[in-house]
Image (cartoon, rainbow, N blue to C red; front, top):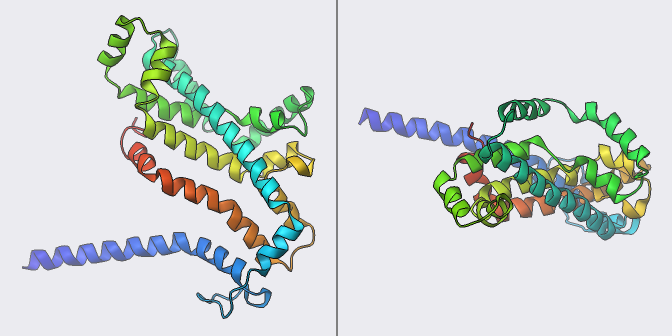
Length: 276
């Protein structure tokens, strides 16, 4: 009896901690959404329910910012980076996991080391490279320098290591080359790894501000995050509701993407994707 009561108390404490953590995580998003629906006078109040819900902040935002153009540019930027990253990181992951060649472990160690280097250290060399190639103010300069990441290679390598060798040997006996094995056999059975790399990669350029600010000058080509920042810097300090409305529009696609693919994401992170 005492044991059951003790377990119930432990479970109750665990649930309280989990609920508290969930509330702490969700509350900033809820406040952002709420602030975008409040009147300017109530934006900074911590009321959980506003006295009046208004869409004025959204109307002001659409009047001052080409939101749909910014969203399209963000999709082009983030989608292209994600697609290129999936192709090249899967190729590198397959080579490191399944091809035997001299220096493979050294290459893998160097790749892991690059994960420790912050982007700020690479930013200046990348910027000089973009200027030399005359890619400034273009999607090529915005997309290509950030279209490879070591984390994607790591996730694919770890997932490919879990695929039985017999499957690959059977494909080779049937005459399949390495390209066919990778894109026709390995990739279709690696949905959790593909989705995980896609979501993690997509979020980077979608929310990125620093790199677009360096490369992009033409407003017609700016992603929405850059437009929102410039909107906030252009003396719109009194329009916090509109700034929260832009941020809500920016966060919504990523949240929908995660909710739609969360099963694969959790499966990959929880099983082989992050296993050493």
